[in-house]
Length: 115
Length: 108
Image (cartoon, rainbow over all chains, first blue to last red; front, side, top):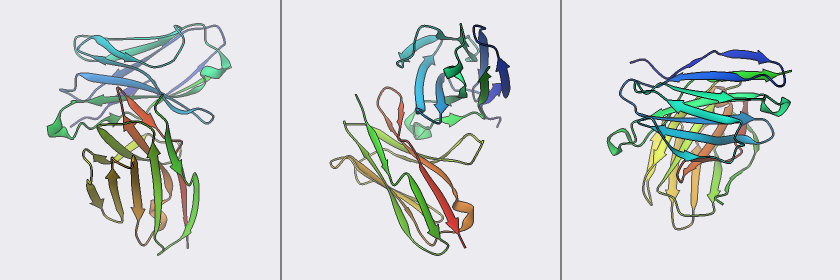
């Protein structure tokens, strides 16, 4: 079955611009989570969506936002980009069920560089 | 605030040797995950540990969970070069809370 698809794979943006990243989860998975990975801060949770509702949110400024559509695809948006937003953004999808061991499957990520 | 500490952060070991990576966490959790990440790649799921005393093995890797001690271990048996990667533990509490990762290098 198809895995978690993230687009685009690479992105270069200028400070002050905004960016939208996309994530298509595994078919049937209704939970989509977003994580930011940087060398300094490691892997940090951004937010989780389930059935179009944000369930949890990490400790990031309001410039970071997201949404989920009825087909479970999710987008995250970062406005007014800063140099420190340069990171690998990872999306994870989950069935959130014991039958699936509550597993989280990660996409290949979007590498964002802010210049 | 949930803290997840992995040690060691860097590990260089010879092929054929055994070693253990430790993952300590600060508050109760219902499940613990181990992931592998190769350079420039995404996270590959290795194990999900759901209960106290859980032990799972896959090839040369074995993971265990002690919820009372808030400790999980990832044991590597007879390491081979292909195991060189960064290994992360993640504790679930509302979301995955990751350790800083253990960068493993297996040398001949």
